[in-house]
Image (cartoon, rainbow, N blue to C red; front, side, top):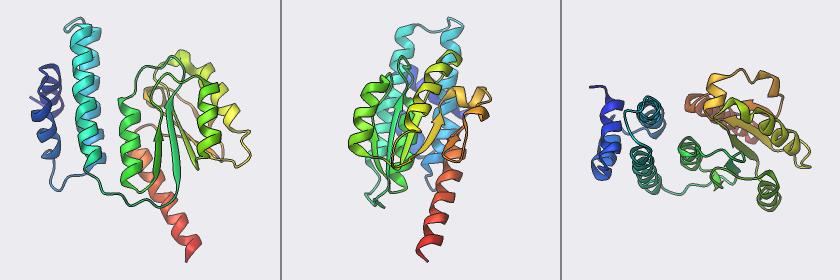
Length: 214
């Protein structure tokens, strides 16, 4: 059995402690980005496929999501605080219920020393603006999974492009992986198809900071 299917079985069986241990020993030394991208993400995709083919119930899918959420929270608590001062705000667009990928993104940003404000899924734009204007993040990360969220996503991006301090906008979620969103990109808007893209973007951002400070 593949690693991600074994992890999916643990999620579906409610084996939270076993799942956490399996994630932490998936590779040595532990690399959360690799663990998230190569184990957790395909595990939850597999759970989704089982649900779509009626091999599991809605309750089973909810249990798997809850266990995956627990594992993410436990791993996130292990990291030390080393904030570099930059801020990121993350949320899923209105009516978007998927959030585990967004939570992984929050964890990666924290590991890199960013101050993270994670607002979860299904956030109306007007409420997002309240937090954005209060927090004034350097980066705003927006997540959407399904293609019919495209008009909402476009509205969100256009709205944030008018902010006076000109934050960078990152687009992520399953829609970014499955659809061509290049029409949304600009010098301030970037598409993150997966966590590898995010890792590369963060490394480039750090190189730019080092070049400016040297």
